[in-house]
Length: 110
Image (tube, rainbow, N blue to C red):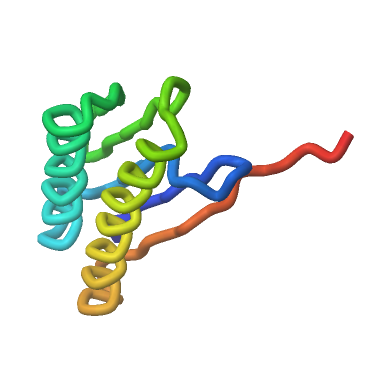
């Protein structure tokens, strides 16, 4: 089963997408193209640095928000949350083949 893990930071903003076993089925492959379109969009239109790596049916996309202003973060959020909506639509239509895990980052209370 293809799986996408969406990680969020302590402000509940998406900071990473990870795909596992995505080359094994159509929704997995579609999810990779959906994510790669957003990688290209962030780089081309917002000039946001990110790291996308793919190998052996898996991928990881880490979004660097360190230099982002509040306004830029809203634009990044709009794109990333839209990607997540698309991924959830794939999950809805391919429940037996595809799952999306939307995680919140662990927060230390020490």
